[in-house]
Length: 503
Image (tube, rainbow, N blue to C red; front, top):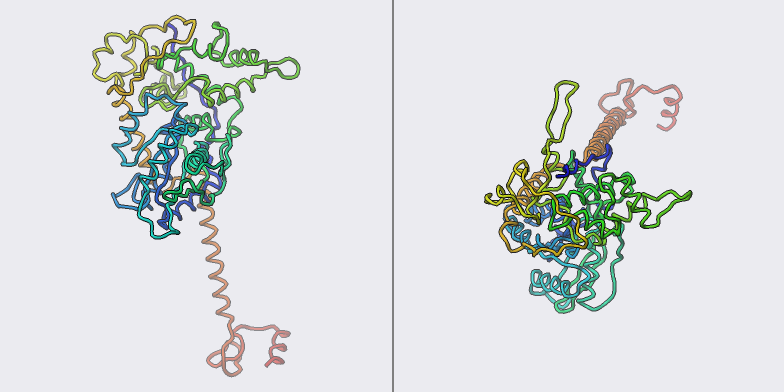
């Protein structure tokens, strides 16, 4: 049996956030719209490949505080409703759709839809659901239904708006789109998407999580968001995204997730079956040769090969794949839980304790007897997988996909548990006083200290002016007194002569 894939080693510096100025401005403008009760429906767009990581706790807190919904809500009734739309569903594993919908329904009464903005049939279904939720008696011929589409960067908000306009009023694009995150930078004017009833919608900039967190969980969240295009790639080292993607693909092959194997990856990339995946450097050299990516001097362009692999994942060329674990394992945070301490004092080090291959509830090999007796495969500890069968031989073609287990209760338990745990984490973030990063908090503290210093300075100036203020009455001598006409301060000779002449 081959050894398990070793854990991923994160670089020392990874961005903890990408919360820039126009996102803060957009959040303030959305808050004003919600507070004014001028919105009938908020269409929150998420990425189906990141069903949990694409939830923004800052947006949840806004709904809780201003509209009576979301995390921390006390059950108050509000005019603004929310429709959760998981876009790019054609790129994610469809077996998670129904379990996710049932799991999310336990925490909120918001309707959840999975859609592809390129499919007119699915967009029509989305438009009908949005109108049904937002429909109300109009107050006059000038009254209209107002909606707003919001979400994380590059989840397809503008694409959904253009698709709604395409099927609703049969007109062309009204919102500019781009594959780069942060393309939309301002709140748009209202755009008409339906005539009966009249429905108008706002397009908003993507709003990133103010703080992704620290440790392995925060680092992995940043990489997953960057892989789906939610964070600018220029914030990362040139090869870290491609190496993390290759590591996740190797983990997927080790777990046989829905029958996926290393041979499937090599076949999709049109690489020889003998290509090694264990060494990222040699793998990207082989991929660069296959792509004929050569730099000056005849050296393989491994940077281009890495960017090509990331783009192939985004375009769906590596198959439908949900990056969030959803209780099935295969993430760096799962490996971090298995680190054990060896030695004492200065010789203490963290060592990965796993010696068996990983296993998940979507694995497609025959499970050993110890797993067959378990009541819930999702809750079996990794250490019980010693008898797992070795990976099958490399097939000559892609295996026949197994039927999706969306209707089986085997997925409901682990997905529901994962959603509940993530909601608890988001609830703590959304109810916290400050969602900002440490750098943003330091800047706010310095600004507050500057305001205090300015207030004290102005107070001292007012006190000096009051001490030097002239009084009404007779001319007074030094020290002044009641009825003193001049200033109650000692003047120089020149100023005293000038004062007498002016008197």
